Length: 97
Length: 236
Image 1 (cartoon, each protein chain N blue to C red):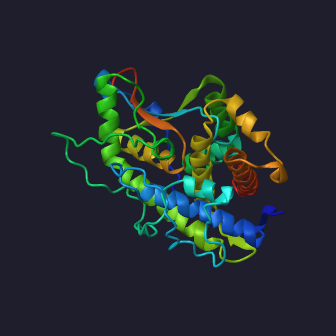
Image 2: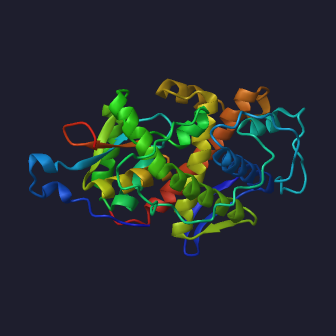
Image 3: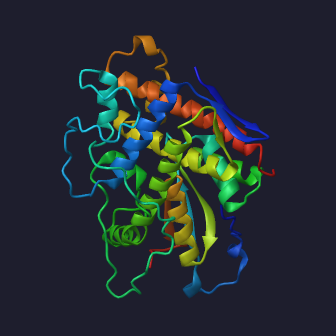
C-alpha cells in the first residue's frame, strides 16, 4: 500500500506548468465508508480531510483529490480504478495534453 | 447467517457459512472471467462447462434461477485468468509520437470495472481517454484479477482471516463484485440503489433481479463491516 504525499499544489508554477489533477466522481454504488477509507489509506489523508472530500464527491458530484505531476497523477487515477472508484485525470484549467 | 468482519489481534476475521463462502467464490470467479474476456469477443451463452466450479457440489443447473444469475454475470467456460503479475504501473510508455488508443468495453459491467480515465465527450477528451486506457487498462485488469484470485483463495477455509494488506485487496474484490452486480441491476441513481436495498427477503426472491439484489445487499453488508474494521486501524 503506497502512501503518497500530494502536496504539490503549493509549488510555484507558470502557466505552462499547470498541474494535473485527479478528480473522483460520485456514483450510487461505492460506499461512503469505502471511499473515505481509500482516501485515507492510499493518499494518507486524515480522517477529517478524507471524509470532507468524500462528502464533496457525494454532494457536489465530484472532488479534486490530488494535484501534481502528470505521471504521478496518472498513477493515482489508475490506482483509483483498481479500487473501483470513478476517477479521471485533468489538466488544471484546461484541456489535457 | 454470516458474522461480519471484525478487527482482532489475529487480523480481520469473518465467520462465514460454507454456502456463503461458496457463493462469494463463485461471484469472484465470475468477475475474473469477465475481466479475462477480450473486448471483441461476442457474448457467448454459458454452456455448462463447469471446469471452474471448484465448489465440489452444485454444478450450475440452468433450471435454478440463482445459478442463472451467476452465469449471467459473465460468460463461463474459460479457465481462470492467469494474471498473477503485480499491478501494471510499469507499463511501457510509447514516448508520445502516435500513442495507441483503446476503446471502452461494450459490456456495461466491464465498462463499470474499467471506467474512462479522462472525462468528457469532445473528440480531444475521447482521444485522451482512449490513450489513457491503452496505457493503463491491462494493468488495472491484472491488479483486479490478482485481488479476486486472492479473495477466492482466502475463502477456502473458515473463519476467513486476513491481514491488513490482504483485507484491503479483499475489499477491492468485493467492491468489484458490487460494481458488476450494480451494472446488471441498472443502479444508476441513488433512487435505484434504494430500490435494490429494499430487497431483503431471501424466501420471497423468485426472479433473477431479486436474487441479484440480495447478492448485492449481502456483498454490500460484508464490505461495510470490513471497511468499519479496517478504518479502526488507521490513524485519524
